[in-house]
Length: 225
Length: 257
Image (cartoon, rainbow over all chains, first blue to last red; front, top):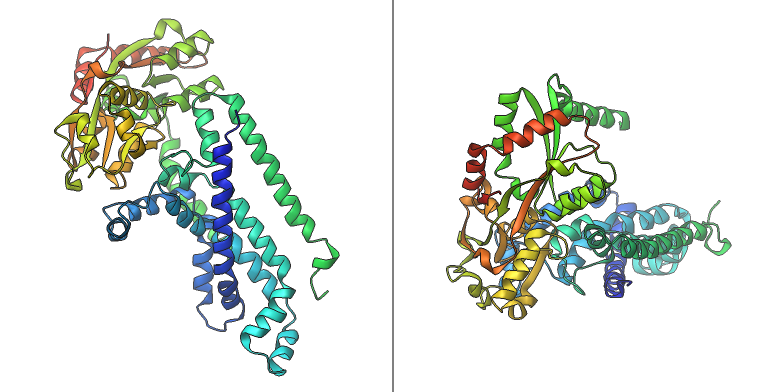
């Protein structure tokens, strides 16, 4: 039996997380790419931390900060009446942190590739900063934005360690596909594990084919050679 | 710059693992259920002194070790929290039948942090209290203590009442950690962890009567593929000694048969 509940939950989680990440990553990537401040490298490093840190580090700190022993955890529990761990919202927050670099980096890379003279021309012609962003920067880097969206969706689908540590394995709430596969393997139900794993494998392959295939599409080619 | 970072990382790794690689003495690898985390280190240290051997212990979930041993993991001795796993390994030829030894029976307790504000003196029935928001148990689908916890809740006829509060840990140690970190109010964990050095000071426990669930029989077995069987047999004989049984008993295990 395929675990459709886990698949639906994971799709919902990944969709919400990638939309949130899109909203965060556009201004953040813009600032990181075009700001002249010296300490952008600091923010860049923080954003990229989930790339190098093992999920156990993030999971451990999240577990500690969500619990009643931490001020954040107590504040959240007082405010909402329940702890942040073991909830869907908790997973969304964890996933946004976990997938942040996968959204920001492609967008920032695409912004950096834009010919500066195009943005300067827009400004010279009297366009506001936002208008330049909306009419010049964004259209020219749409390929990177889509890549960021797709990658953050895919990376959230592939999340495991953090969810295992703060999720509590609740069906329909925090039991994602990766946890469901782990459960099947633990229960020695290799057939079922294989079924769900194959779906994930096919999905991941499709995503990567889309990301790499996109780069070669004429309409999405970089504006400057 | 990149090379420098790599170099630093390699040096750090080297200094951390360098000591372990020196193994002049006889070495034994043991895969142990995570409920032994508190009780086993002293048992191992004593064995190492007495038999001039080095024992490398991996703690984890019994089910994980079961699957790994089936697929050729290089352990010599397997200490499982559920006797069914060693029995299955014997049936498939992955473990020696003659070595099977039930070293203890696990005990189940209700555990909470002292500062949680939850009164657990009423036993399992205190779980229906509205102040108990989340109850951590090990995953009943595959963790022995989880199966026992579910059985006990059903025995007390409160399973359906508390079902919505249950959160599942991957093994009994992680289940304890969910409560200890303050994310769950109460947990149903192994007595052996509740009396261990890490949790004893921070929490209180209430024993769950053994009659409420099937026994959590723990068993040791020697892995068939082991290349160090004489030492493995020595270790099992050592486990059977009364003083070791006494030690396990002090750490929350009922004596084996």
